[in-house]
Image (tube, rainbow, N blue to C red; front, top):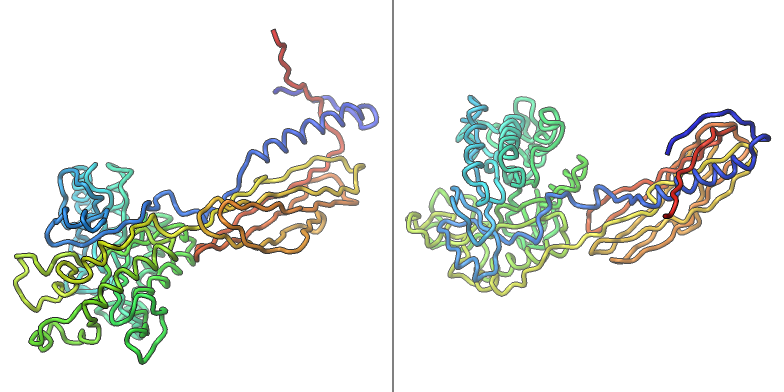
Length: 492
């Protein structure tokens, strides 16, 4: 389309202006109708894992056992070097010893990712960096230091394997820590409250990278003594319901809430370790390594029930949970673990009721989530001042294109001149595939030439995932319009 601008008054070119305005309005309407506004935070990120990752930490790579159990992921600690019949999560060492040569650390990670391209789906960078025992072996944890390594690893992996997923190190639940160390709240010099560490990590990544250096957030929602469905941060005299300080599986909900508060509600969580510990031989309980751990012990049947229950709870209620890796599959039969009191042996599921229970557990795609689409994505209209008062009603269609119910709330944003109105009700619920038409009333009167704006705001919630969409509304008042040559075609 090309245009020539010749000034014409309304009285001289009334018919032409009406035709031109009609044509422009039709173009704007067509353009707007072809746009679809999708809630950015209701839709999970493109890095979301689907189907759900049923995984296990393993001492011995018992691929056949995992296949028998219907699991589709394996977590390993060295690169496989070939294509496995399972998806692979590889844990990469990242601790304080690497801070002296961050570039060298990056070179090592990049070389690893290059050698494992096509064999590894996801890399977990480090392990429990909010604990000194895992982070530098005695060096006090520092979230900003860990963020430096994570961002370095993220960039290096994406350089050679853009499709690989980067998972931040699984954080260890510590409970609420009342001390402050070196200006860090929730820190006693040995470990830091995982929630405060996470926030400091996100803040550091914002400074380093302008955003997160991970595709999925790692967390270790161990169950301790609590049943899988115990409510987070709720204490109880009943050990099976005691989740004081977040010591329960559903403590992960508080971690996701931090993602949401930082505008990262579209990121999923990987529970890269979780489990329940069972009774060791009596002589082990007097071992120093078991000190303070006896309160966490559950029966073998309770371990089985909780593991299955946790998977089913997450795949029903947590669309933001991309996968869960039991800790552990088979440390109890690994020949290189010879200490009969080694704690890791008693998290294992092989040769215990949990093995059969997990094998019999139905495997599903994951929890559903509603996803809002809006038509039109915006509304634009052109009038002249003499056409006022203007009163139009535009039908805005809301549709749930997701797989779970979607609750929506409507609000209006407008300036003093442009009037927008909606009839009640201003909220509702859409089932998957359901749509509804919202009559948006637009009015303008007694205004001079100019552009007048407003918006229809749609806030949504579905399965604890929240989002927001906006339909901008613009009304232009023009005194006159330039001559426009319309395109045409001659049929042969």
